[in-house]
Image 1 (cartoon, rainbow, N blue to C red):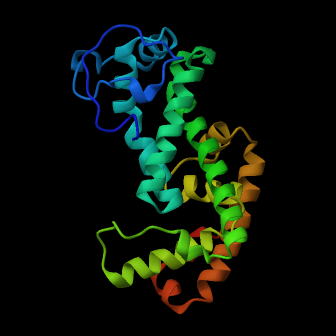
Image 2 (cartoon, rainbow, N blue to C red; image 1 turned 30 degrees about the horizontal axis):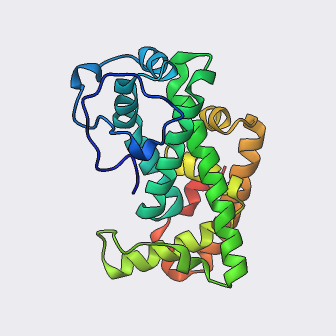
Image 3 (tube, rainbow, N blue to C red; image 1 turned 135 degrees about the vertical axis):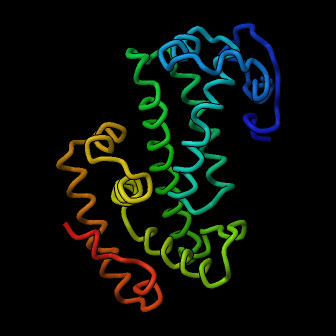
Length: 226
């Protein structure tokens, strides 16, 4: 079971980071008086292993991570797995954060790393099993009509043809509306590298989309031209 879903506690005692998180009751409803703490205070609480900080961190950043992962992967179930991995890493590495005011970027950087790893694993699974990219996209839970789901599957199939870095750069820019500088920061690459990756992604996607009449009607690729 995902340790971040379905557990609740009001425990305020410090949590040992060596303890299995699957046995830790996370505060999803308790400790609401702590939710207005600053990122700096929250980062310090995490570094000290304080129980309240775990629940508040999840409440504050889980929506961001889940949305980013679901948009990047096209699968809610895979997004939840990535979110769990991200928060395990955040809790384990909390003491390494030297600038507490950058907690959000700290969480984002782990999310980007986890997504890059998952996209690489997905490509490998596709090669080894000879599956088409569409078979790796879970759109069954999306509340859209059949035609729209088909278009989404075809679009994510095109995204699967991009390199993990190009795909993440494109997703952060076009789906998360991040600036080039923000992308460079969370991916730990230069702005010039971000520009090159974005150029690669938009050029390829534009060409592939124009070759698919249905997608060409649904996506305005002209705005990607820079």
